[in-house]
Image 1 (spheres, helix red, strand yellow):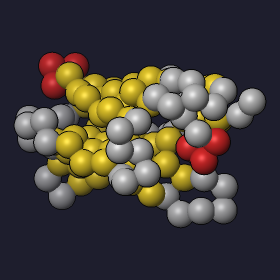
Image 2 (cartoon, helix red, strand yellow):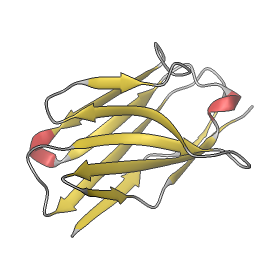
Image 3 (cartoon, one colour):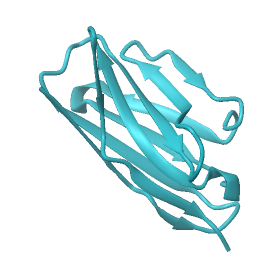
Length: 115
């Protein structure tokens, strides 16, 4: 079994920055994909960014140039550096780990961008 735990959410003003962290523990494969998704009230969950264990990154168009995903394979941890935050970035951010045929989600962390 795999456990996924996010941290780092909070309230920030427009134009500010936040850094999210996600740690996976348990039976972790060396080859996997970790990523961030978000869900705003009344909307479907959407992709924010993903990164493979080899370092290949993928971003949603809405966050390109503002968000950066990175990972520490030794710690099975993925990070999301969010800069130039906008009110429309407000959502619950979920971390996902995918390996083999299985997918594991964290409980989510709230990010609120408001003045």
